[in-house]
Amino acid sequence: MDRELTQPQHEKLFPYLALLPAVVLIVLVGILPNIYTFYLSLHEYELISPPPVFIGLENYVNLIVGNPRFIHAITFTVVFAFAATTIELLFGFWIAYLLADEDVSHRYASVIRTLLMVPFVAAPVVISYIFKTLIFDPTFGYLNYFLGLLNLPIFNMFEGSMRAPVAIVIMEVILRTPFIVIILYAGISSIDPAILDAGKIDGASGWQNVTKIILPTIAPVMIVAYVLRFIDALKMFDEIYVITGGGPGIATENISLYAVNQAFVYYHMGFAAAAAFLFLLLIILLVSGFVRSFKM
Image (cartoon, rainbow, N blue to C red; front, side, top):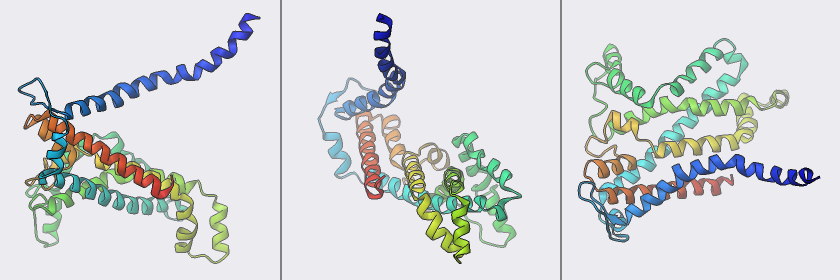
């Protein structure tokens, strides 16, 4: 009888016990580091001359007021994320639509799906180094080789403040578009074929099927894919570090690279912590704006 009375109580506790490891991991990996980052941001802490000295919000004031390098890093980070993610969404939808069309992809769909998985199994650092040396290199890269075959002018993608960002966007689009393709392909494939057939019977063209049926149906999926890729593009570090190192000058220095430089090149740990915490707040505000705008 006692066992029957205590059994429901164990059943109530089981969901909390099952979630406990995940909660502990989130606290240790996500919450505590952010708390310590905010603590460091309130101090003047030079890595080579501890201990930290409390200065309040002075690091934040110095970042926002009279620091054009930080403002440039924030601007480049947001503009790059918007540009790369938007291009990826456009190309990703086009490729996903072709893959979902049996008349177009019935022969090569399996091969294309396999190729789309390549970026997921290769390290971003390795792919970035391949782009830097084998494709964009001004002397040995394939890009200039094929330009030479076409009698087009040869140029250095890393020369000037405009070409280097374009090179990074190109690499990011090629590397990350498969993520968008896989998500949108799943969304398009989930549409009942009878709905599309009914549209064709009613005289709808292919473009009308896309704009009136497919896009409205998978709009929530597209929003989720865009937000996930946008967040990932905001915090990109390894690709920029390998390809340009933030150069030429600071033309391609995003906020992640800026914080790393402040911490481990100039040893301003408190200053870097303030930049990182402001970046966290920026991501929260931008994602909250997306959620409210699209009512996710």
